[in-house]
Image (spheres, rainbow, N blue to C red):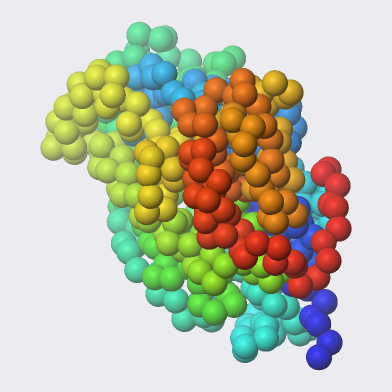
Length: 481
């Protein structure tokens, strides 16, 4: 039987789709990305890359390019817009990066293209059928064949609907106005803004403005500056002299989570799997992190060395993370309400965040660095991501750019043995580890810690297949862009 021309087709070239394509190309998977839109979005909204996503950019050699186009901001004050200073966080990248959404999408697409992915704009999946050998994907004027299909095609995902996966949750009940504009009010007046209104300075008199808009209105009608002024006056008694908007938008509080992330050879990621209000700015980050979790596992499946349950761990690990994000955005939405009861709860939470442990706990939730996947074994650091650390030669994340596993050994006694074709070994007695050695998955999470070779071999088998098991198709070295 003639093999299909593509191993994986990805529907949607947003952040999740583009990042997934790049992750697959690190493993020489033949990838086609289909993007419905022909041109980049004209709507320019600033999005925030949180700490875990920044770490992933560093891990794949993308951070310098991102920082060229973005702006660093403090990592505190973004839980329900409660103004608290950033706590001490366990990361070499303890900051937020604000960047226009079309720019980060372009950078990730260029990264995927540079690694050899194919991207077609103006093409959308209209239907598909899967069988034991692959997936037949229908476009408007063409039929394609692949081994796996991944829906990264947004909240109204065609892939999810055709797959028949439920998307339960709550529809939008209220709306919020969000934009960037100039503000003329003096600092003391801004500091006295009531709960529920967020005014965050960008410099040069430009502020991010978020204000409740009430019940859901006509989503087809773009908001105006007058809408912002009207709502600001209603809640604060003043419009703070807002003028000269850069961009204006509205969002609802719809919150939904897909019942399943995988059915056979079809998977979901990004907004196709979960949606929530943008409060806290977690949506793009959640999708990028989905992609990095899924990429190496799907590549292992394509190349034939994946353990039997490896691909199932994508849903087992990422769906609970999404469920927690949905819960914390629900909580933040309530805390930003202008209702008296919500304001009282907000005042209480604001007091509690004066405790450093509470502040850190809430910020780590949004930053994505508090995640611990349940691998069913200790010590406590197993399942957590490892921060970037300095090594005798370079940095840890610099050693993860190829998307392979890594054994970091302080003892000089550990070996990757028959797994050396998919896991690297780095011996460094100076490494600042809380263990003699660790096994890192390609997404930077610790799969094992200790100094026992037998225990390491067991986890190498669990995550990287039987020892010496070769790929179904010879791999070639993929140059990094």
